[in-house]
Length: 104
Image 1 (spheres, rainbow, N blue to C red):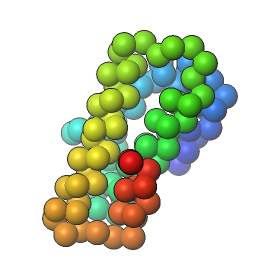
Image 2 (spheres, rainbow, N blue to C red):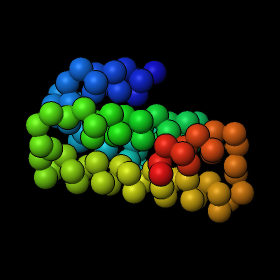
Image 3 (cartoon, one colour):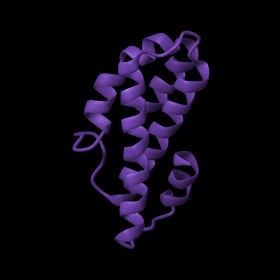
């Protein structure tokens, strides 16, 4: 739910969302505490995170800082790793396809 709200915030103010990237990376990045427990949860949250990052990238009026780009890149890489990891473990729930589309 929070990722959906943050995505809406990104449409209103990309600058404010960019300021929150360190905290988002802490929670949703590698070893994050809010990534989910089951493959379906992890993939769904990864899909929502990709939508949030895409919204930030497209709606940001001011250029992003180097730190914001680093977090953006790290989170994008993590989304692809999550996708590949689930596929490699043969854990491919229905959420995998939405996460695959969002991460690409």
